[in-house]
Image 1 (cartoon, rainbow, N blue to C red):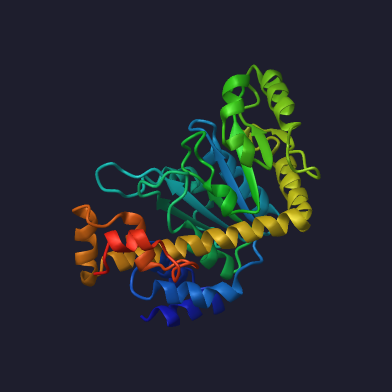
Image 2: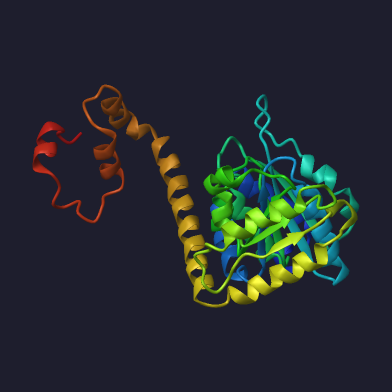
Length: 323
């Protein structure tokens, strides 16, 4: 079946199997995947995009499962993109998050997709944005993105979502470590999960002290305590997420949306460049770089001319004659 016809079934008729096939086309970058996203793009843009990130063991998947349950209780159609660590042997996803969301198997109002990070750092995969676009266009709202769980370097999620939830546990870190943690700089809402354990007050005080330095004058990230295993605090969390969504309708939200669009375009350019570098006619250019007759930066300029491509550095041109 052609991707264009499958897209009509997935978006126009709500065919879950057709949607699953399209997600596979995009994730694996099969024939026609760019056309699928180009056709889906105008129908996307209305879903609430929520990211859940944090260190391994913080209970992100259990919390995500509880959030989905609460959203379904008010009849919202929810999609989940769970980015799992890659297997070191096959490169595939370990699919742990799908196992933790067995509560929603058979619920046609929930669509769960696990995907492999495929070795990418930052907590997401290269094709996460494409999958989110399709799910958004298929009228799922909200779309929840759960990151790998690699800790402090996991910051890509801020460029893919409207609201980032950072999950920590009681006794997490200390003042020095927290000050260095990149995830503290991207969080819109902080959740102290497993709040039935000791040291909750100390963790809350540490976070609150640091979040007072928030750069968004109109939004100081709230701190919510949850026990995801019994859904305690989850309704309060969703209320805070909705409040942040309303806040994001202002200028700061537009800046964030512009960042997201920029990240999509940058990813698309990277995809095209990877394709270009695999073309046979580039063999001589790559060989010149390998043998040090040409530097990578000049090679890049030849592939993607910059705004000053016409002026250039004459001495560099002399030392690196055109191929």
